Length: 270
Image 1 (cartoon, rainbow, N blue to C red):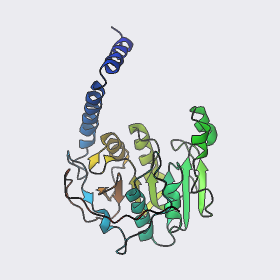
Image 2: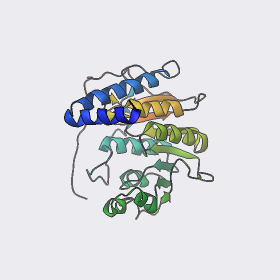
Image 3: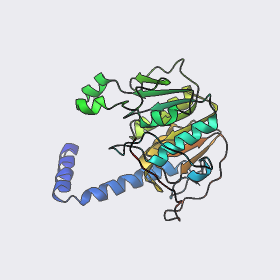
Image 4: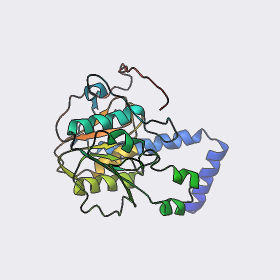
């Protein structure tokens, strides 16, 4: 029987019994977990994930206000964007911020009032159309960040975009294609071309939900990191993010059902 026939039969089985998809996804996650854990001798990684930095330890003592936030499809968590703001604030008023993956521009807009400059890279409208994506979806890209004077919108594929003359940046946010190959390639290029010794890097969707590793993304991160990277790698509590810091941060072992940090949330229309 050909591989194509086997694949068709497997797909037919999933259509007849949708619960089989959970089994397939779980097996896939286990494979990615095994691949990631090959790096456990180099990075402090266990079967439960990366060591966890508490988000409140990074936020300013008086807290912070996030704006804008649309609570829309495909959005980062509010805590993800508060993390980016905290890291930019730590870098100082001259901070230079770069991100891969613009979407509605919420992350770029969230840090723009704190950073000296913001660069955000996304596929061009033409490239998005070539993927047969709808026009209303394409038109939303950069919705919040386009009007901001210190935000530069770059267009192209992060796998081939010419980064010469852009870096280095103080904070880099990788939030593009979350498949293994793309995460690995973006990670390798960012570390090779866009950083200085004190830069920090954040990867989005390194967790499926806070405290639950997304092992395919973690595998891409770990396989893309240079072998001689001197910093530390963490998960950040209450977020979907992984964080590379050039200096050690207070962290605790990952615990799936640890007592959660509590936050006060105020929501009002902008």
